[in-house]
Image (cartoon, rainbow, N blue to C red; front, side, top):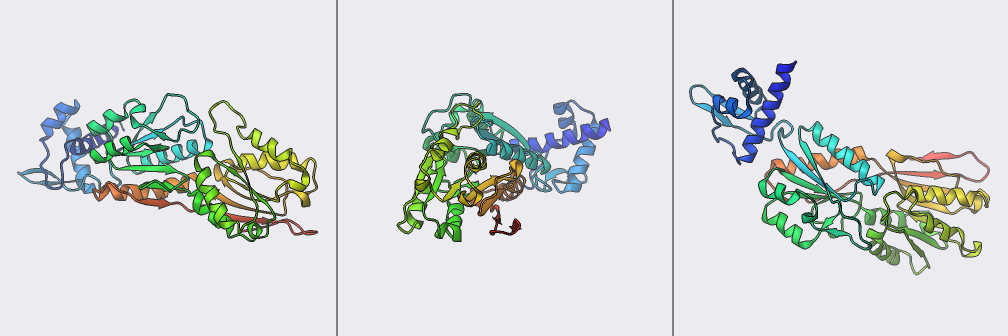
Length: 366
């Protein structure tokens, strides 16, 4: 078992050597003795590693000539390292789930991951970041100690120019495609347009949207275009600047509860399932279920909640594992082809409609 572990490690180190030295197909590899000295291991271990790489199609062996590179990225891209940059991973539960799922999926495909976290405090209305604020990230790009970069949060123009100059493949992971050339997203803009196609939106007297701050401008543009001249209300969610906050949307819920009944919207649109949960439970204490607003919302499969019964609730369910599988598969295909642009990857959530007709039992329609 020990020998097998050593062999696997040397395999990864050989592929890492190929990538670090930009060895393409047909490039000759150094001798077994070279790798034995470099990796401080036995000749037999190196020979086993080379033989396994030959079987996997990474190298080919020509008797009495030497070992040559065949395809260092075949069979799950062994040896590749993907950097992931994130601004406070505990500041948003959705990003934490995505981060864990992406790391796991990359590891399943034989890739290593390296995490870069910006230590500085969040600033109100700051949604673009400099990669130079992430310790070690610039050096990793310059030295090619990472082969690609997945980033949560948008980089500023100087950072994007630097990545392009270094030909570093990059991919934004998040919730909005607009403004992102290469991205993997559950796209809030697309989802809101689907919400506006629903019958409960078209018949609503007065919708309200609880808008996440980073997407507020885009979402209000969509609602303005799709509302048909009807009034709608926007209650912006506060930015989570305090990472210890239990319910950062509490103020938004209290504002809704405080409205006079005749002015209160009859349809809630939200991209925060926790907010909807808190809102409906507070309303349910004072109102009969037929007076509760209908709901259009997104929620995470990883944080499924129970809600008081409303006449109709349609949900767009995010699955972090599905997001990671689709993203990693397409991103690695891009890297294998030698390209730097992955384009836009739209991960579609599942949609569920929950209706409670009067005087009948609850039913679930997929």
